[in-house]
Length: 199
Image (cartoon, rainbow, N blue to C red; front, side, top):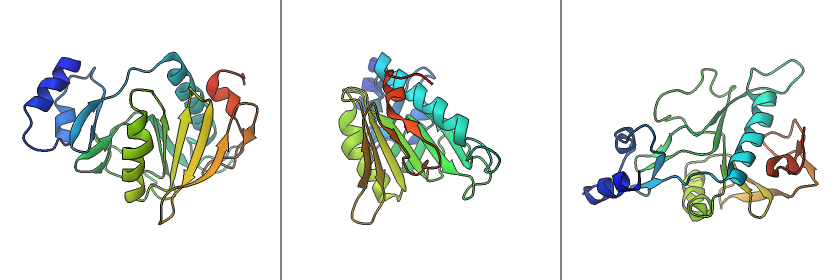
């Protein structure tokens, strides 16, 4: 996998795009960051556990039409390619779109519809991308909500878009139960993300 990406990078004379990702073998998980194809880190047990727990909780409550006994109102997916700009094609750990803004489920590879919420679960090898590079691209493109889940430090941080930069509106740790926007309609026990609690 690594050899494939090195060969691709070495042969490039122009910045990479979504077409370069589509040309990779199906088992290669990569993104285009700043015009360079970057391999996504293989998830650790802690990363996978946090991603799975958050996916299960949010999809069960929100991945449906609004109304009824649960909040609903979202399309929530795991690791789909989202083109933010021509040379910025990311594969976030979780991505969500409000159904009132997009009644039809976003589709295609890559998805070219701006998300309403993105969540990245940090991996030590790629944390700088999630905390700096992608952070700036998401803000520049007006993504309203950005979450960071940090398995090493057992912290959830929720950011809200504002013109001057993302504002951290919530920082929480295991043992706390929060209502984190944009999903404040339901409680989230932070310990669930880090294997410290069970439903």
